[in-house]
Length: 400
Image (tube, rainbow, N blue to C red; front, top):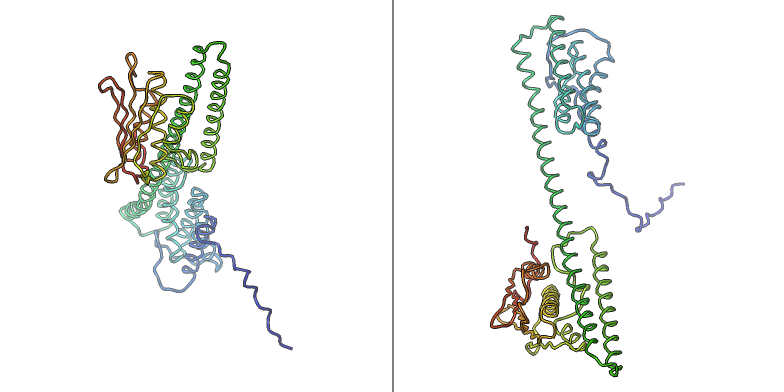
């Protein structure tokens, strides 16, 4: 009794393999099979003939020679040298036997192109052997009574060089594209390393400098000032723990973005702090730093917030190193869609000398957001001024 087939479970989806996901030899085999079918069909299309010889042969010979010139193309990119040998021998045998193989002779052109484009080893040796083989084939066909003239042999040889030069052109373009991709990957790695070095420098130098300043201040405390000494040690410990926290956050953000190029500042998750947080922490440590900012605070993009924090952090670190104990004033302003941070501190002695890694890092951070950074001594005060659009996004890092 006839019964209806069971209904298909809608959760069961047919798995479809995309064409590009198939092995390369499978895709090339499809072309070879198509050429085989076209060659066996009575299409009345003139094939590729070289010697114009016609002999009676067994019925199984033409299909074998056609298969040799078509199915071998399945390996044209996997083993181009072997493919050219099989196709070439099949073509030569067909010409010497005087067998018409239809459009299968086009497989010789495909094999030559594939060899020029994909062969990796002994390319010149194999190419020279193929050229010698063609000359020997011409002599053999002439000995068999072929009516072709020397000009015909030369003309057909020039025709065979066309797919050769096309293959060389494709090979060169593929190599150039691969070189561009390698360069882009190297540039991305170099930018990521520069970013990591810059962020590590900012984190480590800022907190270590603060710890050194706090430790040096204990030298001016009397032995009776035990409470102040304990407070200083606690502050040093808190600063060290804060440094470890920021380093862990930075490494965690790097792990989340492993394998991707990083040409912008540290992600917001890595350092969720503002300039106001930086100033508050410094004030808690007893350092003379104040912040002037508009009320309410301007709305800034995450990248601008992080960049302002890092620039302010490095500027404060430089003030601690070169002018310890000097009053530091930070002024944050926003107008006409642009934000400006100005860090000013008194100069003790000669002040900062030749710009080092920190000042170059600040300039690079501003440049990433399409802004600028100016530093210098003005009226006995060292100033750091950074400005860029309040909604700026990172642009590719400038090449050095």
